[in-house]
Length: 267
Ligand code: ADP
Image 1 (cartoon, rainbow, N blue to C red):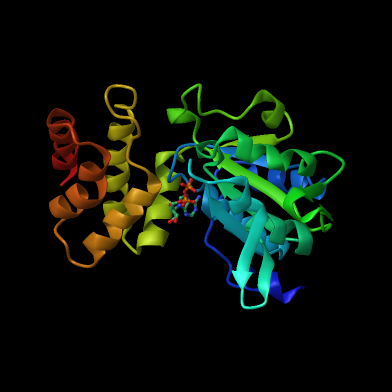
Image 2 (image 1 turned 45 degrees about the horizontal axis):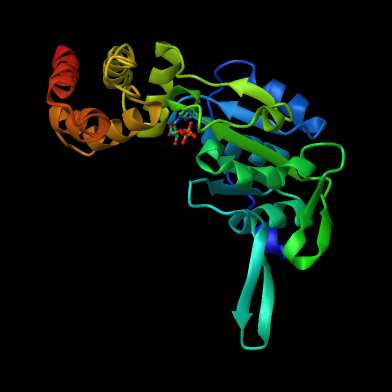
């Protein structure tokens, strides 16, 4: 393996609790180098899943969180000034394409559409990445895989993948797991007992029912893990739930009061 991507190899097995058939399906898609989109709410385990799969496939994982200020150069690379003049520096996507890594573009719809078109020639049989500025065409390494994620929950029409981009991907839907499984995840990740974990999961379930009623997103698994860690450290349950679960997701006093009531049902 090229040393430029060796640091991205995941050596320790990440803890990932499968929710459904996602592991088998992803393996099947990867065998055929099918680019994949993982859809689902934030904090439901998409990133952890990709880390787990990268570990299992023994392929380095290069992750890039997308945002609206991102340009194509942030993905493919640019010329930088050096003592000897200008030198080309591969961007994260080019590194993955050239040397064979999984490139994971988190929240891909945040990036402007003119940025995401650079992935088109990589997502069909050509598997090439043209570097226009450099006058080079990079042929994808056999291990190169492209995985992107997005949250269909708060998508506006302006922020969506173009149909011509979408059709190039296979998709797997993610969501928060059923209560028993989520309790298990919170126990393992947070190092807490089943009783505490299931109370936190109960609060989250109630908050998710408020989605679309003023609340953009309910309490995620990630937030439950954070609250459980605080409680395990000795922070009182009410304070931990306010800090990690309720206050972060709303600024509206009425909604906050409603969420606090859910906490009081359990603690
Ligand atoms: P996303 O990428 O969907 O925003 P993450 O993968 O970052 O979410 O998940 C957030 C956290 O939730 C993880 O760091 C992990 O602690 C926990 N988590 C969520 N789902 C799982 C799962 N299925 N197995 C293990 N941990 C999980």
